Amino acid sequence: MEMTKKHSLDFEKPLHDLELQLEEIQKSSQNSDLDFSSEIKAIEGKIEKTKRDVYSNLTPWQKVQLSRHPNRPYSPDLIRRAFDDFEELHGDRLFKDDQAIIGGPASIDGRSVMIVAQQKGRNTEENLARNFGCPNPEGYRKALRLMKMAERFGMPIISLIDTPGAFPGIGAEERHVAEAIAVNLREMSSIKVPIIALVVGEGGSGGALGVAVADRVLIFENAYYSVISPEGCAAILWKDRAFASDAAKALKLDAHELLKLGIVDKVLEEPTGGAHRDWDATAKSLQDALINELKELEKLKPEDLPNHRYEKFRIMGKVL
Image (cartoon, rainbow, N blue to C red; front, side, top):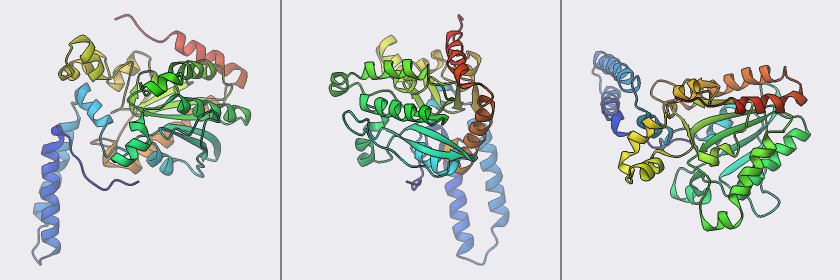
């Protein structure tokens, strides 16, 4: 589904107003014989300056808001632009097909890969079908089924992460969501093909980690990856979700902070203003990063990958 409706966050309002002004002048120029080129050029200059001012000093909380932006490209949007020949496979062969996780074989730069991706919806109907991007246990079991298939055929695994967390409902608990995530952590640690995880939006708690035990963990600069959401942290520590911005700062959700702490291996730049402003450029950034990482990981022997992956996670974390 393509982006059809513009949406602006509170801190984007100055930029949004200028863009609306530009659209009005452009319409007036098209519908009359008057020359508005100087006015258009002046507003375009203001827009570029405002972009730099707005997005150069974002707080961690504002970056969290961008990670959830309604117009941000979701996994299928990036898959269509960065990969070829994607073929979605369904079901966990145990219970049902969880639409919060999609996956299947594809190709990138002539290489066959297996994609596992978390997916939200853009409207009420889609969100209900995809459970607002919160996977049930059958979603993690489907992901593991696809990863085991990839290992059998020697295909690198690409995991695209975008979830506020695993679904905490009664049904998920009855079907053992914690066990499903735990099994994925164990099994992914020993898979003998390269695994690359990329946080494209939200990377919430075990819901994200359940498909993120990887040789390389990448993250877009306006995405976040955390043990808990800012709202959840605020509700626990301050007993009030209104302190979410304070929680976001304390959790060090900024992608570059995660890089310093060794939680992620690389931060991918987004177009000026965020991924939602240019899906094609965002997908190109993703594609280039994945191709480079695959080239590096192909130098390792399959039997050595689990040991490297183990060491990567053992040295993670610092005492501040």
